[in-house]
Amino acid sequence: PAGRDPGHAARMSKPGHAALIEKEGEMGEFTATIANRLAQAYQELREATSNGDEFLAETLTGEIEDLRRIAEEHGIDVDSLAGEPVDR
Image 1 (cartoon, rainbow, N blue to C red):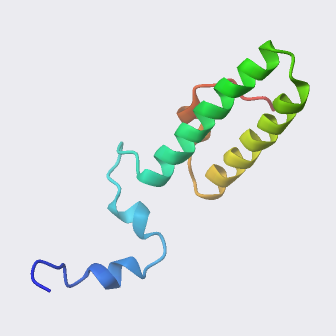
Image 2 (image 1 turned 90 degrees about the horizontal axis):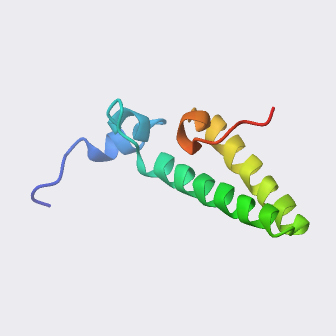
């Protein structure tokens, strides 16, 4: 089809393609999604803690741990994304 990049398919088949097309300092869609989900989970955790909902707080803590693990597996510096203190 007219206007298609002939190298597009070859680049898409290579591992790490998303990292290759993201410019330095630019947040990709995956990174932005992780950042947004972390921010939301941290906000909900603050609310659950404030309301004394221990079950929800534990559930959200697990979600945050999962998101942080996924980010780490993909080389995303979560400490710079969430702006939250890190419990280690």
